[in-house]
Length: 111
Length: 112
Image 1 (tube, chains in turn yellow, red):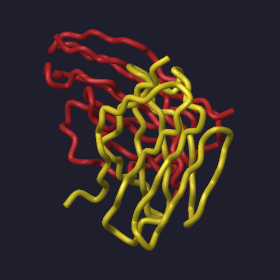
Image 2 (cartoon, chains in turn yellow, brown):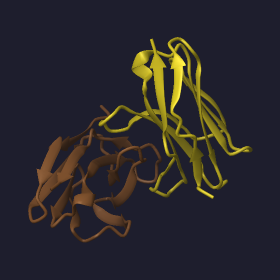
Image 3 (tube, one colour):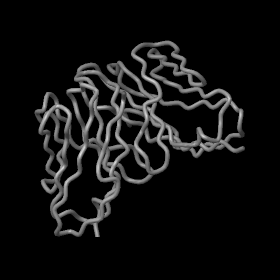
């Protein structure tokens, strides 16, 4: 079993839709959770960082962590064509510098 | 400022060449990382430096040689690479022991 599972997609939605991206993980020792956005041939850009269960909102983006279910989500409201990218979840343990990445979900927002 | 810079953006090298990739950050981070990323795959950790000392080497072949001259700079020296080493090489930095890593734009390496 992989430490982090993420559906690679591809996922295609119309402009303005709410997008839900998800990852599950297997080790309850993981403490912090990140979402990165990566455009083609560019480096990953940190979108959201959370350290606890619950929701964190930043503009059109909401990150949700459910530690009891070992499940994390990223919601994108009012999706725009510029949101078309690969979204990577990344999970880590306190004091450890190795992140475990999901496989990435390729998202396309259609105008 | 959350910027990590990398040079060059693109590099083409033969299997007998020696070249270096460079990375710089000015966020005061004391942990720096090298990752390798193949197409449609997540980044794969190669090396971690903490306080300018190598703390993690993910069993990377010796044809890749990292160097951390100071707390802001990270180099990756390349020698006798193979075509399968062609990939996007990413540098990242973070506070030591804290999860959020900031990535640079990457160097796209092609080995011919």
